[in-house]
Image (cartoon, rainbow, N blue to C red):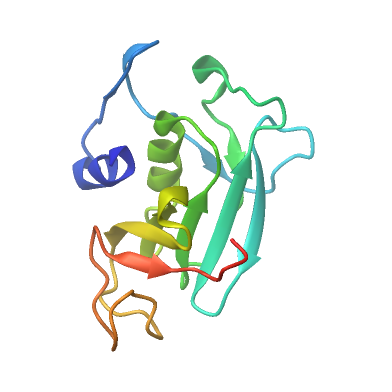
Length: 151
């Protein structure tokens, strides 16, 4: 939800409420090569029409004050992005803003087993049917993207 609203608000400032921190802005993240010792690591898996980014926190915790200017992987501009990982909600908002030039962005929801929820789109149709419905349905916020079972 926060990822979708942050993208809708862009380029205006966006703030979200965190019970421990109060009202905060998503961290600004930089695209580039991720150092091996970075507090946020990413595993990028390429699928036919999208990239699956699984983020991890090696120390299992990331302080909000340390999250600004973290480096996240650069991606090709022609593929959709699925974000995944056990992360704070404010970090999902920051990741969505960092990748906002992707044709579409979805966030993996473990409760949905092998589906991710689209939070934004710039291109109405994927190259192949990625939606839960039959036929090439347009991707729009709230649409579900089917993922391989190994996710």
